[in-house]
Length: 106
Length: 116
Image (tube, rainbow over all chains, first blue to last red; front, side, top):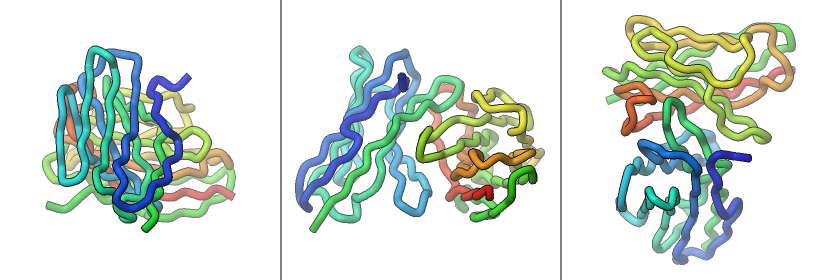
């Protein structure tokens, strides 16, 4: 069983829709990361959270430490948001979720 | 500031050969960690180096090894390559070691290794 569960695995949306990706983990953590991976393979760090909420442009990430749950929201989605979104937590190493493949169509 | 660089970007090897991949971290970063990404297993932690010392190692066979130099550049080596070693190998750098907690990771573009 993966220590980090992400849902959904695949997500298709129309441009402009509000997107939510969920991440649940089972251990106490010091930080949770949201990462974005485009088809070329490179990974970009979107957020690092230890509590509360962070916002960057159209992206919002929240975390509930007590419930061991985090969400990534994309407002007004755009085709360029199409990518795989991965959550990961770090203890003495990074443990990754399986990723959510998002496709946004015009 | 230059980002994390990895060389080579693509590599084709045959079974039984060995390979060395290189990662240059962001200037000032002392931690370099390595990851393997495959369609079946996803992203998995290989090992982390901090100030030339291996701090932690993932669940991989001894054929996978690494080192870090005094300028923080890191190399990983895979000996006696197997077909299953075909993967995207990513490195990430950060200011402090992973166990230090709140510590943003900056990823390189990856090296895609194909083993024939």
